[in-house]
Image 1: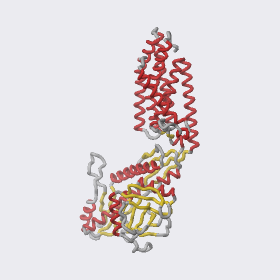
Image 2 (image 1 turned 180 degrees about the horizontal axis):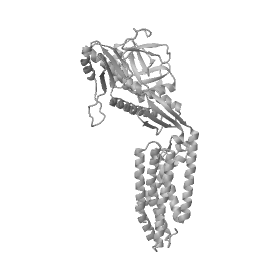
Image 3 (image 1 turned 30 degrees about the horizontal axis):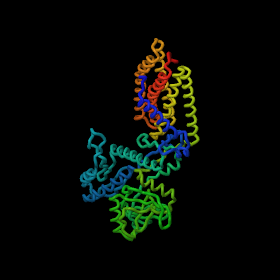
Length: 530
């Protein structure tokens, strides 16, 4: 056990050196890190919200908007179905999450209910229920009246889908900002928690607060916006001049779902900020066909129910790309391009709670964490040194290597360090000392039994190994469970604890044993100074 071959000694030295090199950038300034040789690691630890400062938002998905859009679509389907079946009706409308209508002929009630039920789709809520649950419920409320509403299962499914889609889109948008390790997770049935280090609340709200629903519509020039609007059209204002109204066809030519890219740039004609966009293959074909058949006519580009541009089609646009121009600032064009690339939110988000952690508070937390760590390390180092003498010095050197290995691994993985993560590191230091105490006490016991120094050390390490592994493996399992079941700060604690367990076993059992082995070979002691 005390014999180390050359390759083993080299491997241990290389691992320790790698930990030092990966940890080194964290104590250097950004300028010093950039001046390091290209072969040197340059990644630094990312600080979490509680250390770096940033934004904390609790958002709520507007479920009413999701249900309303679903019922509007249901209303259009009912209209088409009843017309196809030649069933007369009147008063078809969406009324408080219900679609209601009245039949002109009460004798057609059964045919109408059958036709509307034929529009329903199965909702698979579980493997046991299969396709038995339908998405709409049709109710006869009088001799001629019918009410259609969503089933509870469909409503729950819609809400879950909207929250999941919102989380994914928010993650795309926030990742575009270049931030690291944002926390975006569901809270309850219809709420989303967003925590982003290093970003001010106003900047964050500007990105995540917009629905960014982009659509392209045909402009109805034959209808006066102040007059009677046809049922297949609607009126929207200009984004800059609210008094300028446009009558647009409800059915969009294209939607933002057909976009594959959007980039901010500058117009070659007037050097104004613009947003260039590109459609997918299906969108490019549809857009090309439409522009070819509507040359000389205007069409509207609509973002979140406001017309941002209404250009005239001068010629067929076949390339599948185009530009959105307006009175954009550079920041505004960049913001819009980010929103379009990430996609539209399924519904607007309400901000229920907003908190900002200032950089000064984060700096205070970092300073407090440093002080706590330094006090803990100094206390442990002194205790080990006074208790075990030379062997305590070996343990302290291994302890420093352990700390550097933890920081190095976290830097290499680009992990985010939080206050709970610092707590995990401090706990790991204590656990590493505990392993050394077990080994050294065992060696002391064997020496008191009259064994030679080599035999006592060999037996001490051998017999302490099982106890050390048992204690650390059970703790590691607990840390893994915390990581998979926990969220946010709990995960940060679990990550540092898991890494620390592995490095502490390595330094306490392998590194100290190597130092003791080198000391034994060189000094040939007749007794153990422990």
